[in-house]
Amino acid sequence: MKSNVLQCGMSLRSLLLGFAFLGSVVVQAQVAPAQKDCDITDLQICALHVLQDEARIVTSPLRIRGEDWLWVVPFAAGTGYTLTQDAGIMQDLGQDPGREKDFNTVSNVLGIYAPVGYSVVGYIAGSVRHDDHLRETSVLAAEAEVDALILNTGLQYATNRQDPKQGSQTGKFWPNGLKGWPNGTSMPSEHAINVWSFAHVVAGEYPAWRTKLIVYSMATTVSFSRVLARQHFPSDVIVGSTFGYLIGGLVIHQRAAGMGGLSFSSIRTPNGKGFQISYDFNRHDGD
Image (cartoon, rainbow, N blue to C red):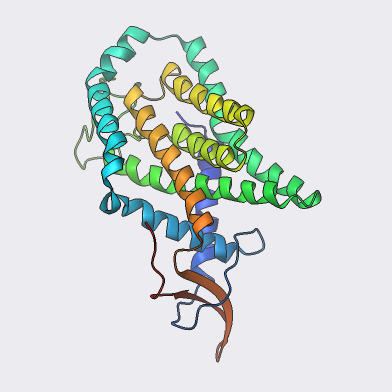
């Protein structure tokens, strides 16, 4: 079971993000102003980035290209097969309270606290040292983590799957129908989707092999730890890890390509200061 502190922290982060967006955005059709970057001093821009990311995430199946099937088909087949083996794998793994506690601690530290801590410490260090790259990477990592949290929450409520310690311990989906919903939040793994989104961003911004080795080893450790801690089934981790990796790549691509025709700026209205979102319909997105 996830800690109350973790749940509160994640919920508060999402709530604050929502209020920052809803309280500051006024949509108006005007000429697009200069593009700004997400920063702690421009939370409206960050909120717009997240909104744009989520829109592209949920509509991504509509943009599947021929080469994408090279990973989509193996992913679907692997996930489907693992779903049939989940219960047997967990039964063979057995139960060991001591082991489960240790691996749960490891996955909490590496899967949640370390990525969030990196974003905070990295931003502060980048600001103090005037290291724009470090600060930008910290912001992008945080953006990817928020994207992952939003998607993961929606998918967990949609799949409504019991975890390895609930019910018959076989990972049933919608075990009681709508009664008592949600009955479980096992799929996807929140820790896996969070750490893999973080790892891809950091590895993309600092592509040296040592950095990749560190962050991807950390992500892999978290994925295995969630199973060994009996917090998730293997298929939950596969889905979470894959989606997290894709989210990290999307964030890097989105920021490198700009805001896809969207722009954001402050304006003055008869009722006071506001903000506008503009879209350049003459821009052609290469995706």
